[in-house]
Length: 279
Image (cartoon, rainbow, N blue to C red; front, top):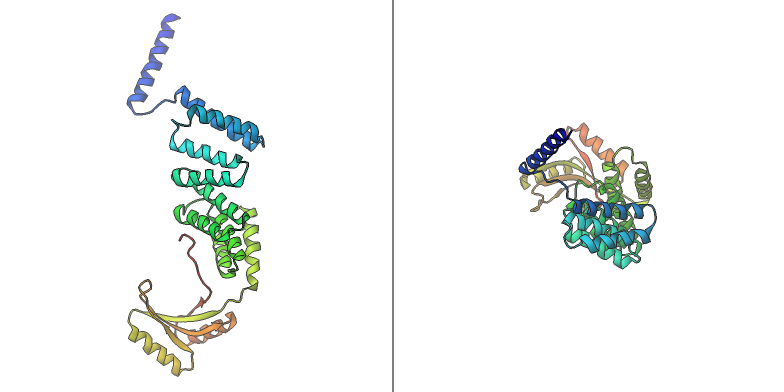
């Protein structure tokens, strides 16, 4: 029996040595204890026991805070923000996650919560800054569509319904299938856009040369269209030939149908402001 035990022990030691040589680090008791304490604090917070969760987090901070990995520190700050007694303390912890733990899995969630917090404080412009940063810095975040919902709410509070409607539209486009709660909220936000008077123009063609654009515009004018040219810029180097200004949707469709019969390939362009929410 003793021989078999020694053989098993030697085999286990050889396996452990092989893993270390291969670069696989085995968890140490200290690392396991650290993770267990953080998990305990999170479970207590999830169960609605904030006092006990704060005590567990304090024990973690005292025992491991100075030597913890950046990911674990971000995890602890995020939990501390959730457990904070007042908004200012929560904001400070979330900001630490965003600034010092920007590469952690908690940074995008922290930005979302900062945006929500600022909306609750009626600092809507600041909320849009935080939520826009989430969209810009974490374009694949699962919180992206929800950030658009809160952007829409903040924009509407600022008296910018066009921006609000654009955010709601984009949120519905990006929404993952099956997220019925968020879909309902975005749909409700989008429903308010019926009060926004959207106007349109009809784009007929786009050219790199101004002369070509002006020639087409003149020809369209002789045919009775209200044609005009949108000049090129550094960001948009094309000269765009368009028909009509501030048209209703039905008026724009009528113009587009007429142009299509004449052999053009027109499409409607909303003259409401558009926004890239990643900027």
